[in-house]
Length: 235
Length: 345
Image (spheres, each protein chain N blue to C red):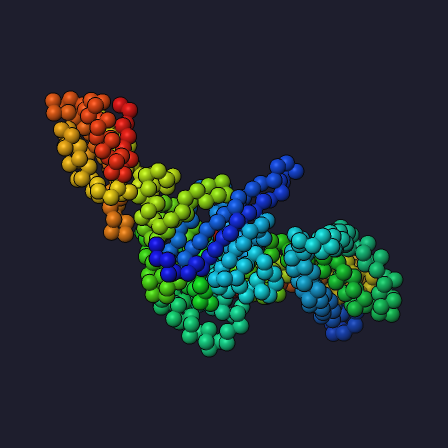
């Protein structure tokens, strides 16, 4: 037993610090892809979620039509299996980034998959705000922008943080799949060295690390969500 | 009614028709409302659910465009406004809601400051005004709590302070006490009456609770099926035995049982000569009857007694009063402006 562990510890994945073969480097690449994707997802997904919510029952037919079209595109993108999406997007990343491998090319697919996912969750978060609260602020003479900034976002914030947490965890899972197109990161390490290279110690190590990362994300998300939640506890 | 008070709200032929949901007949929510509410008083608007109260509020605040008619608040036709002009006009109207509709993400003080923030009042002025309002509604010490940490009555005080923040001409209260218990209801109503005294603000209370109207309102308007069926000063409406509201404002206890005598229900208050229940008893005695008050509701509104009592009448022989005596008495009472009718045994 001890000998096996000692033997495992000699694996180059654990002893090397850089390169796609290093476990430590792969952690950084996974965290980089996840964080980069999430920054873009919030920046694009939150406005999209607000737009879906705000335009759904607009008095103007053209706006409602646009809402239906965007909603349809969001649904289509959400129903794509991520593995298929990432392969389908290879030409696009070739065109935009000049390459179809590496973390940045993977992030293109990750963002396209996670923005619609997050936008729908954000839209649901906004729907939970009682209509009376929004109307109360409209009756104070608020503009639409003031309602978004001062009512929709702050009132839905505990839910929005929960949605960001859920999306982050989904994205961590997606980054592992992105390993199949040589994105780098824990997924690629587990696939190339662990699965194809028959090194079970790498599989064990990446699984443990991914579980720990997910637990940490969930813990931080829950803490943050509670910190901004001033609603009455209904327990 | 003091004729010198200017109208602050004028509704002129206000109609609101909604297209039918299933493509059938359109729903007429408001069917030609004419109403004048004068400044500095507390106006009650009552009606059952479905009478059009909610639609009326939404038209007053410009959330709903009337199908036709005018909605004038402080001289501005809200129904004709849009965009920035409408948002400006809304600041003349403070709203108080049944469930307060405070934002959970803001403290009491931040909620109160919200209308000022929207109006672009500078921070220093905002803080001074909030401190004043916190004091005014009796919330000192709780201003930094979030709504979830406050009681129902305190939450409604925050709601009222928020409604007053931008110094509106009118405070429009939509069922302000319907979610509160009896004691808290009285406190909130006293606060509203007190605010009217101190600020001279016009208060409109929309409610289904007659007790609220009796307790604080100066005038009352009854909405039925989208129409105004009775409106006027509370005293006049309560005293008018023919109107639909007097019965609800001055409800009568159940008809007594086991009483010997002919039971006569008398609504007085509209009468110039018979002003109290004792006057009625004396009138009956002048006709040679023995009269006893067996049930009644008597209220003094605006220093004037209005009431509805049931008299048990017996003749001199101690037997229930006969038809002649009853006819003579009823004639006299009717002459004096009292509405009297025999209760079938």
